[in-house]
Length: 422
Image 1 (spheres, rainbow, N blue to C red):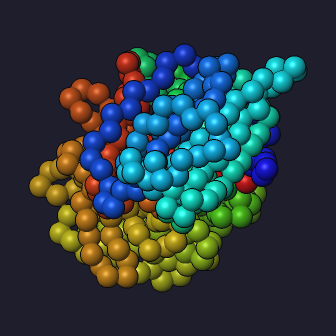
Image 2: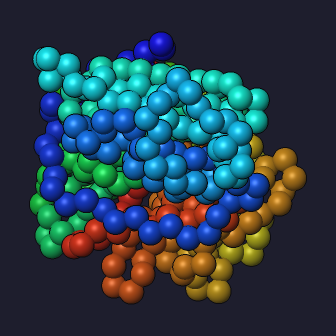
Image 3: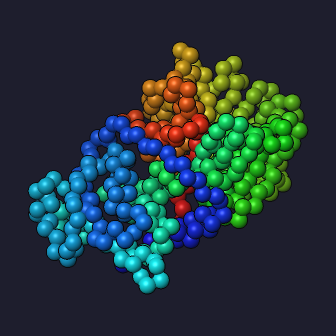
C-alpha cells in the first residue's frame, strides 16, 4: 500500500501556527466539462467514525472539477468481491471504494482503491494513518489521485488558496483549502493587505501591507509565524512575485521617481532594477522556468502586457486589442496567459493562447480582478463583484465550469492559488 504524500507534515506545522477561523465559504457550481468520465464513489466502510465523511469530500471535489459525472454508489462493504460488470451496467467506468478504521492511539486508518470496471482491475490504491485534523486533507489527496489516474493531469484538490477578507475596517490574510473549507487566519490588520503571493514550496506568503502608512512588502512564514520585511524603499513597494527557485522575488518600486520592476533576495538584499522605461512598469509575474517576467506597462499609452527576460532587457508586447489589459498571470506550462481586460467599461477575465493568439473571455461579470492559475494550469481563481459584495470564482480554462466561493459577511479579494505541496 502506497503512503500518502509528506504534505501532511508540512500542513501540520502550518496549521499549528496560523489561527483557525469558524466561518467557511459557500461553493456554488455551474456548468459541466466536456467528455465527463462516469465515476461511482461508494461510501467508505465505517467512515462514520471519522470526523469527516471521506467519500462525501471526494465526491464534492470530483464534481467541482467538471471532469466527472458522479454516480452515487451507496456503501460497498466487501472490497474483495467487486461486481465489475454490475457497476459497468450502472454506467460507471471507474469505482472508488474505501475503509476507515480507528487505531488505539486515536489515529484514523484511511484506505482507498480506484477500480476500472471495464478492464476489471485495480488502477490505484492509497492508505494513510492520520489524526482527525487531517481527515479532510486525506480525502483531497485521494481525489487528487483519482483525477490524475483518470485524466493524466495532476489534481489540485489538496492545494491551498490565499485571499484577503475585508470585514468592516479589518483586513485578514486568509489561507484555506482549495474548496474554501478549513479557513485559517495568517495575519490580522487594521490596514489594507494586498497581493498575496505563495512561495514555491507553499510555506510562505509574500504580501503588501499598509501598516507603515505606505505599501511595503513582507514575507510571512506560515510554519514558524516569522515575518520578514523585504522591500521598504522610498515611495511605494508592491507587486511581489516569487522566482521559481524561491530565493528571490520581483517587486515594483517607485524609489527613483519612475515605477519600475526590481528583483530582490527574499531577505531584502541584492536589489536590482530589471525594467527600464520612463513609464509605469508594474504587476510582475515570473514564468515557471524562471527565464521570463510578464508585466503590465503603459508604455503604449494604455496598459498592455509585456514579457522580458528575468535579467531585464528588451520587452515584447503580448496583448494588442483596443482595450486595457492588466494583471498578467502565466500558466505553469507557459502556454496560456490570463489577464483582466477593460472593454466597453467592463473589467473581465480573459485567457490568451500564446501560440495561436486565440483569446477567450472566461467571465460574464463586469468587475473582475486578481486572477491566479491553479498549479496544474486547468483552472483560474479570481475576484469579482456581484451586487455590493466581492467574492471569488474558480473557472476552468475552457470557460465551461465555474465555482463561486462566497462568505456570509465582508468582501473576499486578492486571491492567490498555492503550489503543489511536495
